[in-house]
Image 1 (cartoon, rainbow, N blue to C red):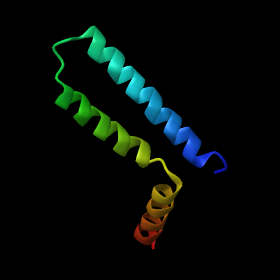
Image 2 (image 1 turned 120 degrees about the vertical axis):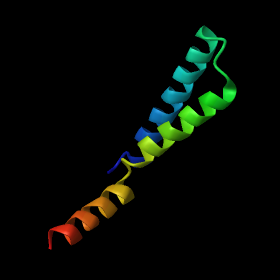
Image 3 (image 1 turned 90 degrees about the vertical axis):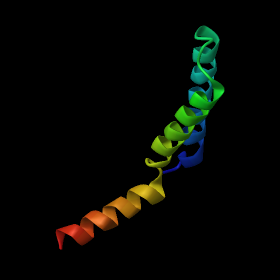
Length: 65
């Protein structure tokens, strides 16, 4: 993956911008809720990195044997 860190960083930055827009539109949302959502979003983005995908391939290979 040639553009590995840039694609994931851009996805995280766009996610932050969207969360701030949601916070501005809905004032009753607490900051802790946004932090939890961002952590879950970060985990989701991290699942699609190359090392995690390689680990998943190895685990699938172990299961298929």
